[in-house]
Image (cartoon, rainbow, N blue to C red; front, side, top):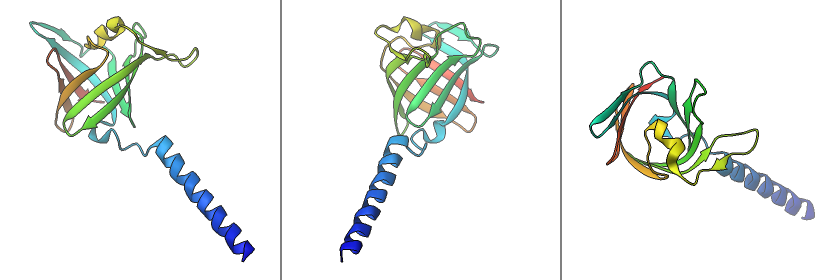
Length: 147
């Protein structure tokens, strides 16, 4: 009887550890059809627009994290937490990505402007087809091509 109780306790502990690991790591499906790397090709901001087809500006979605990156290295990489609910994308808690020295929580949005974002937290409506996507807010529309 005592051995049986120990076996049940051990199996319960293993099951608990497996479930907690899944919760911490996630299964990568949070990003859904956004998952992967997107090349930002065009930014529309009111009467202004910027052509980025020849630039190396990428947004990469994985799990619940989004990395904004200028592959030339001229601009800071930004790491965002995001929530996707249907065709709504909410970005919040931006960090300046710096693995060597520790990611730094942004307190003002100046580093975000290059990526077409003016606010620390922003909500977009997602308009997506197979290989293209537009993220639309009340201030900007960002156009992407799947990479």
